[in-house]
Length: 500
Ligand code: NAD
Image (cartoon, rainbow, N blue to C red; front, side, top):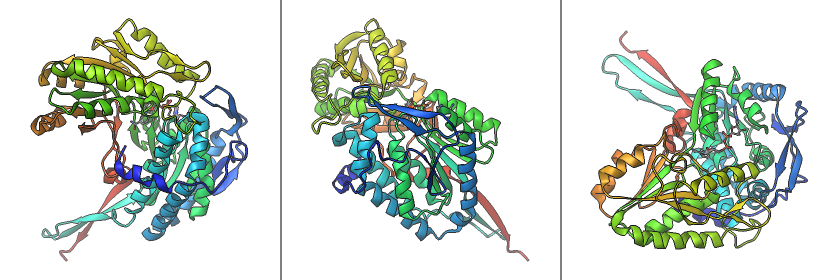
């Protein structure tokens, strides 16, 4: 998922020795770990066998959210005026600390997400560390702009931070999402409250120790664990000025409603997807097969931009099917215990997700031809085989709905016109892939596909340097690149009268 990220794997080491027992399972407010005022605790399970991992993780209630917001408000006036190089240095230090403690952080996440270190586990650490580094570089480069003064008025635009901002994140990227959200928020002088998913809060809780060591002043960067009720308290809070959300489309819709009903806080939504990969006769077949197989199995298919609809032009269909089937069988062989060094595909996150994905697979048997997979793996734990259904009607449930597991639908097509219409006929519009060696065709499709991102001879990619996000019901706004900075600032225009 990006060459620059892959290269930094070598820096990941382990300094702290958190474990699920010694990890502070409290709220990180004002640079201190404090007890939640709410009596309820979160219960976490290990997806490799369903065993209980913890039942004492804090859930932030109303008083706790108010305390975090008050601390952020108190910290904001000084933080926004802190010299950019000081903000930069805190962020760079945090990135180093994340890397230095990467193994321990990845192990904590593996306990509840089941992501093997050799694949998604290390990607997560890189993405978080590189996210803070990337946005650290922007601290002194996004102050604003000026416009012509020939009419006697100099116009200056100041890009100002919003104040108290928050990030509500899902379980499928418990650390990857942090740099993408906290990075641009802190870089532009906002205070930031992180609300991790109730299913995977460990790495975020550990971050408190690193935030303090990195030198962030109290109240600037806080972490409060909790469930949807905690998220709703933040999204509807009158003194939170921005919520950056990643998660399901249904929750995203509710967040926007809460934002509208409270204080019209700014909202960025990164939601679901049903991304198409379109494979033309003239493509490099092996390249297309490899990308399509990786894209639906990385993180056990629990990736918002996974290419879950594969369309192959009829001239190479048979050949593609043979190779794709084999590639998915090879992927099935890589499914296993996430703690084992050789495993690259772990279990689904929990029983709820396992039941949901299994339900799609069962119903899919009557919606298409099961080409490969379709079975549970092992006696315990939430493992499924990478699965492909062939010849599935366009309006079938498995063609339309986001499954969020290693399940793809595969169909053939004839013409470019036909496939653009089919690919675009989805409520989602996050990512699309086009496999062809014809540059004109690639550019035509890049223009015509209705999605936030289009990969040519690749799919399911993210880079910090390029906008990330979706069209239609895949979201609102963009993360990464300069676009993320715009989402965390308000342009203030100053007119200077030069005519007297
Ligand atoms: P989810 O919507 O259930 O939960 C996401 C977060 O929102 C969690 O922290 C949760 O506690 C919180 N939440 C739940 N209800 C809430 C409410 N009423 N108010 C405020 N916050 C609330 O999503 P999930 O199951 O954790 O994640 C899976 C979904 O995320 C998938 O649909 C996937 O496509 C999407 N996703 C999108 C992207 C993207 O960038 N587009 C990336 C990753 C995941």
